[in-house]
Amino acid sequence: MNTVTLYPTDKKVKVRKPDGGHLNENGEPVVMTAFWHRRVRDGSITQHAPEDSIDIAKDSAKPKGSK
Image (cartoon, rainbow, N blue to C red; front, side, top):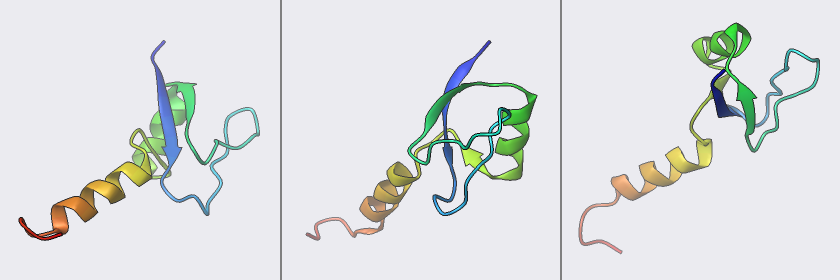
């Protein structure tokens, strides 16, 4: 089976795991099953850390040559 690290898309919303617990808000490695594929499809989780995408957006929004 394929194991990936998944992150909640919103740290304020807890994402339930199949065993009844909650997905760690800082990401957690899980085996990709139909359950997790549905969560990705409905937008509850992502394979990309939310902090990383925010940092990239901030860097790309700056005009070249600015500090």
